[in-house]
Length: 292
Image (cartoon, rainbow, N blue to C red; front, side):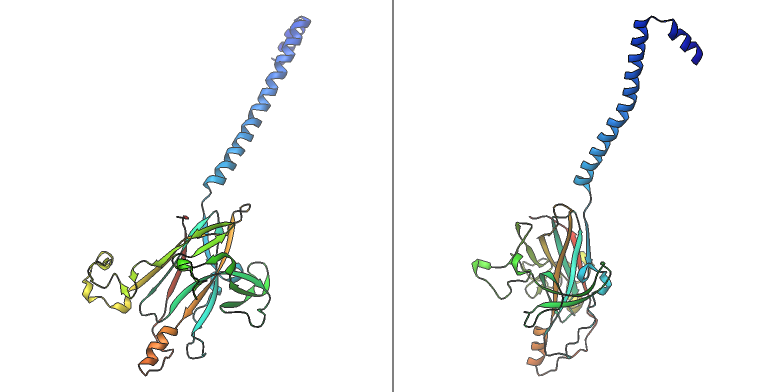
């Protein structure tokens, strides 16, 4: 077959031979060009899709972006110190998230109050007279480096001024708190989802209150044990510190465990505040959110 084609090609005139040669060359160029163009087009579309549609990923981790297991809240000893609070550090890490929500939940048998502060990491040991709250942390090498670090309240990115008047809780995440990260300020909506002041909406049958308990437990609201009711707190619309180039974030927080109010109540009745208590469980979770 090949010899027959060569023989026919030799019988053609010079002009026709040139035409056949040019046509063959163009056909070969098309065969190469079409797949290459298609490959570049496909890669560009995949890159666009990846940038727009890549899902957000968020995690709770320990200090220095280490494993969650290094957050140990079991060592709160209220009688071993004259202090009325203890502090811990944790991180919100992940990617592709401009805003997120932080949630805390615990039951009403818990004698502690909890507060959150945006924090920043400092290498080394805290200098003398470092203002509280701050958290010292010894890294375990999980994030690639070991050593000493300490975390302080990130006062440069958070304000809380109701009616324009600074408060003693200026660094705590409260309703109306404003956090500025990556040059953008966002106001946070924070508070309990099922508690209004001292009123636990799920367990108190009060005129005008929202009764969540029947929907949750399908049980007589007047027979609910108050100390067994879970409380849910949430801060919504927190601006993340996501890097615009890598699209990764690593935001640190200080968790304050405070027992001042519970201790004062016990001592006001002539009692002694002790470590004898029921198991205290607190859940911290994070989910992507919006800046609204």
